[in-house]
Length: 567
Ligand SMILES: Nc1ncnc2c1ncn2[C@@H]1O[C@H](COP(=O)(O)OP(=O)(O)OP(=O)(O)O)[C@@H](O)[C@H]1O
Image 1 (cartoon, helix red, strand yellow):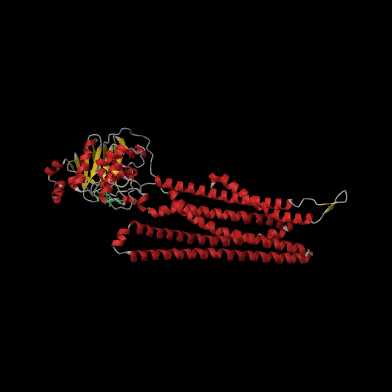
Image 2 (cartoon, helix red, strand yellow):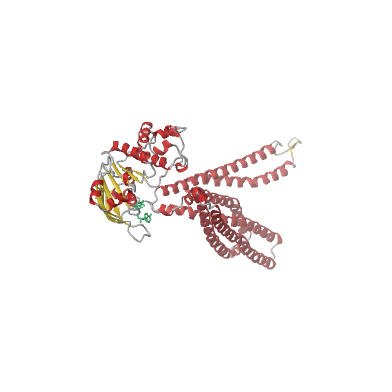
């Protein structure tokens, strides 16, 4: 809330002003009654009142209007501060997500991230702000009452503080339990959220496996855990008040007994004693309200720890400073090794690979050979454990990440599209140019299809392109890659869902860029890559053969047998 401290200060001020008007009202009535019925005798024998009657409604209404205004301002400013703070926290969380290390995403469930970025900050700030209001409303009178108690009898008041350590002990114990139970409730809530994510994301699988009962049971089991943890948290919370009241009652009995004793010995009047006890009880009632603040603050802390934990996610290493402009796309991997965390073998084992600029290089090999890992390295999502990767002769870790990624346009195995129009998906994060859109759509053999759509380029394609066929989704992704004018295009199984005719059309269209772009094609369907300039055959994290289609066929090695199998 610090950046919005002015808002916070004005909120506090407004609440203080509301509180200040409070005693004015009984005071005013007291004055009006006192003075209003007691006329003074004027100089010439006429009766005179100290104020005219019309002043009563004017002052009273004025006072209430003022109070209403302060109260409105207080609430408005509080909500202004809350909403701004929530916005800031969300923005900070998003910023972390946008720059988190690629490996973070292996374990991060989208629904968890949604919950942490969208709902958690609102809850935390709401709970904290609510407590702030209670503190302002009940804390201030408690302080004045305390002052009054000191004024009446400072020795006894000081004595009353002996219960404070006991109270603190109880509160600490209870809080620790609330926090533990709260964390459990928070985590189980997130686990519940992921079931919903699965059910919506994988609805086809759920339906086709007739898995409604299975999902319902999974949900019920996690929901039960949420319910149990919520109940335990509530029980721990409910302990706080009776226990602290018990401690307070101990304190009050000690004080009352001591006060009685003192009164008997010194003969202090009953009036002073009654005054003291009344103020003490009033204060303890205010303090009881204050103890209610602990619960929301503890809950807020639990949630805050959950969502703010995201701020500590490891950020992507981006220490490079150099930039390449007008890159050609000459890539070298020198003795590169890569092992994923938790894996028991290297995904790439001393890989040497050269991809010449302006040519088409195909990467082939069995599943798990390491082809996609090469792409992850090139884009700087993964970092080699050994060896180095050069782009146009520059080690890629010397480049800024933004500049490195500007060199590549990738169509990956899993197509990701946005719930937006065809045009937005293709000109993603770039200015829209309709002529260029037409050019890339024609190249991706999609132009006729888009022309036939009800709103053409502006037609929405649904969540992750769900209104399109598998092949159409791939072609939109291809068009998106072509639209990004990068020196290197990477097609990782980019045409696997296309029929032979569309695939050929895409390949022919790509030929117009031949010599100007470096093309890396990964494909299992060997007919896709037979026209590639160089074919690199990978197995077990290494290149085992390289050459053109004809050369490799003639060599009669792994590639030749792969071709034979596919025929
Ligand atoms: N995030 C990861 N964590 C752990 N291991 C991984 C991870 N990604 C890939 N691997 C492992 O690394 C190896 C190489 O995977 P990679 O995806 O590069 O293979 P590929 O040749 O592209 O396979 P495919 O043709 O099936 O796409 C595999 O053994 C795989 O299990």
